[in-house]
Amino acid sequence: MTWLTVVALIVSGVFVGFINTLAGGGTAISIAVLMMLGLPANVANGTNRIAVIFQNITSVQAFNQKQLLPWRKATLLALPAIIGSILGAWIAVDINEAFFRKAMAVIMLIMLFFVVVKPTIWLKERKHLTQKPVTFVEVIIFFVIGIYGGFIQIGVGYYLLAAIVLGSGFDLVRANAIKVWIVLLYTLAALLVFIFHKQVHWQFGLIHAIGNIIGAWFATRLAIKWGVEFVRWVIIVIILVFSADLLGIISLKEIIKSL
Image 1 (cartoon, rainbow, N blue to C red):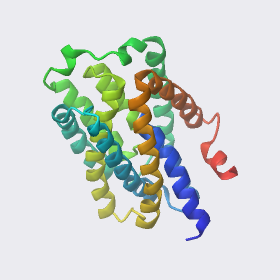
Image 2: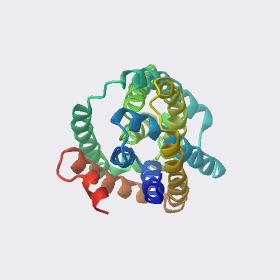
Image 3: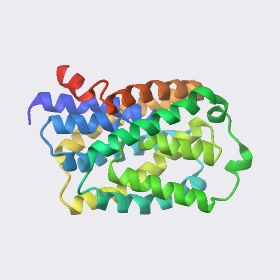
Image 4: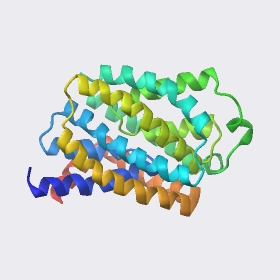
């Protein structure tokens, strides 16, 4: 492994950790970089989970220090996602990448509409929802999100934020805290499936994780310090950039190659 490879993995990891902690979609960069470095798509998909785990451990610890993580509710929401992620990871042996890229772009743009037009939904916590027990509908929603997260991971943060804010009533900062805990738990389960199928490159994954930890550390502190309005604008920018990439308007992979 050359020093350029190490630098590429760490630097890209910083950006990915930052983006994933505040919203989601950074995995698109991870997989693009890992494939650019020679890994097949399925191995890049599995290898990326190592960095995701480390970045979310970092974020969970930081959010917990500020007492922003409602452990019981977050864990109950995570359980169906864990089960779904195992199923999704098993399906991921044959990835239909083109279909998911287009579908994800459409869903991201729909979510962008709600973020821009109805910002009060995202910014205000609704106690009558946060204090309610987890419903059957929430179980189904988080199970389906878990399937997607276990399958491809890219952009899953947006779906989790939408479910946590719109369905469970938390504001964006607490929703981010819950999101990173859910992703940590279900990614651990999904990684075991990829390990079983020998679709993990440990050396690349662990080096990439170093950058993810740094990015997650900075992003968590910015989210806590600058609040929900800052997170909302980061989400808007990221959705626009990644939707453009998914629809073929721009190519993040080519941009990364040119750097």
